[in-house]
Length: 316
Picture 1 (cartoon, helix red, strand yellow):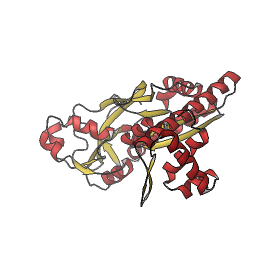
Picture 2: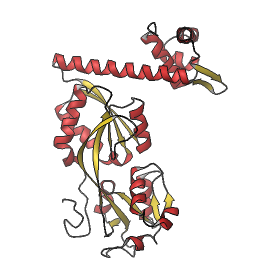
Picture 3: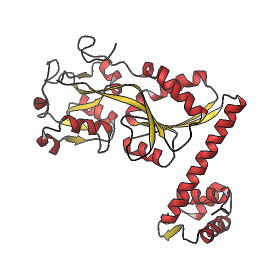
Picture 4: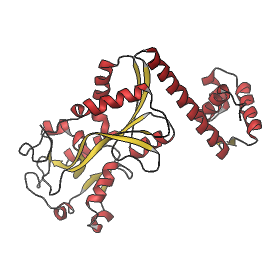
């Protein structure tokens, strides 16, 4: 294994990403036979086949996945080294791959802009996905820091809270429950909900809310793949939704939807900065985490509400 080269690692990463030798060769600026030779040399060194040849392209074997994981770890360590050298040199440069769950897309761009005001030399990459996609990106070293709710339990991570995350139930402004006070959970169970896909952090919180009403859990509602679709469906009168208060700022201001006054709501969650514990913290990562802890809360949306200020524990 000590004879593997960075060029060879780059080669198998390209093969995995593009599934065919010819496609990988184009990306690498090499010929097909040259990439084939790199793969053959690695397989001979490993004594194992790294890719299965299928009709749909090359698929990594168990050995191939192990080598790909090592390639990802090497890439990560090279990036950390570059950031550390920049820090030693006193340069305000570096890079940060930030991941965020889809609910956070309503404020993360503002946070990045705020951070770049004092760190203009940082090169940012932002990847938005649902909770499961963001966890997978952490697992495979595709991002440095994730902005999300509950940190994953099956990956070694370090995490820090930087702000509150209220979850509320919203309805169209003319919904029969709009304006009623202390709506009970049992009354809500009769309503048609518009919900996120399985694995979503918001979906999980709603399931926990209705945990003592198993009949509701059996028929929770209509599943939709994004907060934007859910909001438009609520406005159209297709149902009510349990959603992050940070996603509905504009619709509430325009009076298109309202927050229902539900007993036990809002459900209070937190926003976390999450990174893998088994990797070093680069100067860029450390700077961004300091920024989040110090200034993060002021970039979170302030949610307008049709009730007296403070009724939901949300400032503003």
